[in-house]
Image (cartoon, rainbow, N blue to C red; front, side):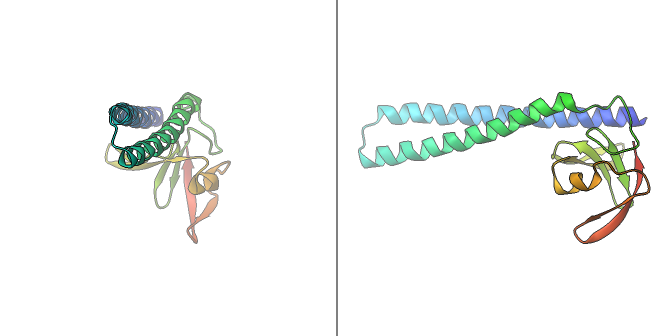
Length: 152
């Protein structure tokens, strides 16, 4: 595979992962709302109020997760894989002595043609180490210094 094909496959996996997370959280929110509706029909006193309060907290937490996922959805179109740069940026493949990284979203390890690529956000600690770096430059992460062997 060419570099652009690898990037396209990685970006597709990022998009699918975000979409799956989005669908799961929407399903969770629907379930919580249905439970709230059922709780509102009940009249069990204090137990009823406690149940509703717990469901409200669950709904707030799910809403927070939904906002995070929507932010990821807005980031995906900003990932430019069509052009390459000698400086690492959003959409770059960063090849190091230890691992391969795709500067995109923090979704973890993806295997493409038996090679592992860690999808990391530019705002993550490791992503911050890579931004603006070029082939041959070193970076330090977890008290270990490594070298960048390629930026694509």
